[in-house]
Length: 124
Figure 1: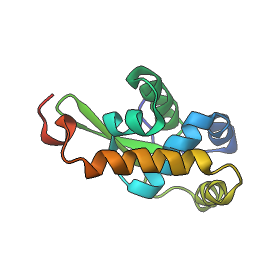
Figure 2: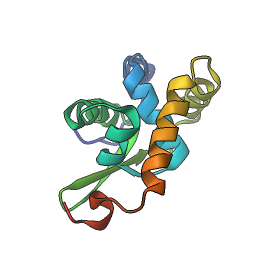
Figure 3: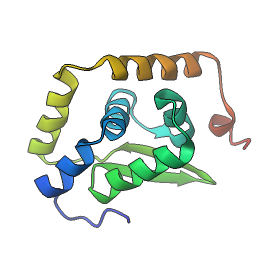
């Protein structure tokens, strides 16, 4: 479901943040900006279908926006989140248990250092 312009409420936000994979995806998008689904699958070491399902829930809650380019989908944190939502996300970054985010960022960084991949070049 596409974000419909409504204000994100706590009833939208907290169920999304209750899942560790969604929190990890959100932290990656916050740290790296716009990312292709293929980048996110490598970063969190999960299949594309699992990552896409979690991104769809985040999109329905109004947390992320998507840009399509051919067959590829690029996600980013939705600009203009309510200040209280941004504060909750900032608090998550500072919360204990950030090791998963560090490992995810390391995998994503290694992927980027290895050079362009097929989704970057449009070869898939």
